[in-house]
Length: 159
Image (cartoon, rainbow, N blue to C red; front, top):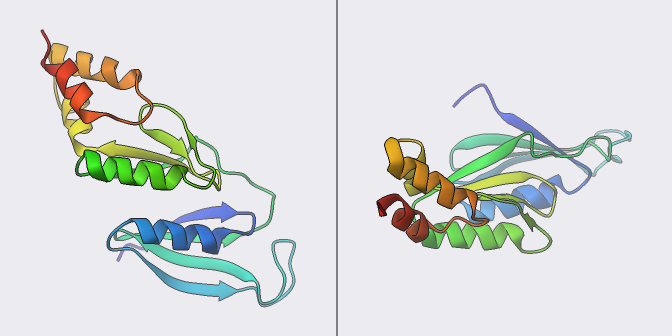
């Protein structure tokens, strides 16, 4: 297990967010919930302070630190999906309850955390490919909100 993990600052809903995230992805779990041991600006004694959790083998920590800091699109979590069905399932789940679609597979969930829901095929068509087909695939992606792989494949294949 890596000594490095990512800490995500939440106002007070870090445990709810972590439980939601772990419900969506395989090989995910809540590892530990640590309560505040004393009253602080971030929470009262007994409230959840830290939630250590794993998303598909990657360690994260949700810190309920109060309303001091907000998430921004400057940092996002990328989920590589295997197919359009998984892309659609995750896309809709993250938007459910108050998320906001952005563009090119990006969205912001109800807690303000940015996610990129990226099909592996998109990477093959836009990043790993060369030439005109990669350009056409990239241009097709730029016009999308939720990624539609069939449309991007058609664009890449057109001459």
